[in-house]
Image 1 (cartoon, rainbow, N blue to C red):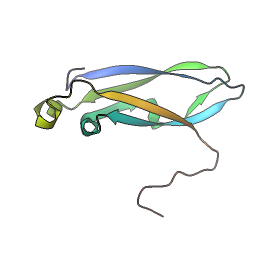
Image 2: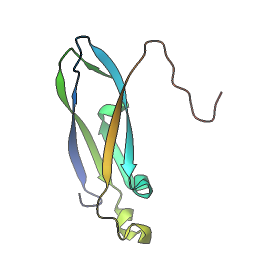
Image 3: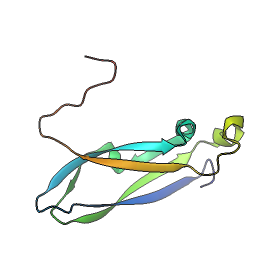
Length: 102
């Protein structure tokens, strides 16, 4: 991906169970320092996703790397950025804690 240009990637998810699953995704960018330059325009991770029993789907993420990435001397040796997701089952009625709040 050229910094400043948009790109589209797909992540495949499968529900191997016999019941519907509603989940949310969290993402991680490696190396950590490159995360500040990674910008998601549209992502399946912005909303809960429902997967029916045995369903397999391709979920899109539309993104770009900020052009300032190429100007940052700390990123000079970075030629690979990995974006990964972890899918968690959403529990009905469960509220996620907000960082820094009680």
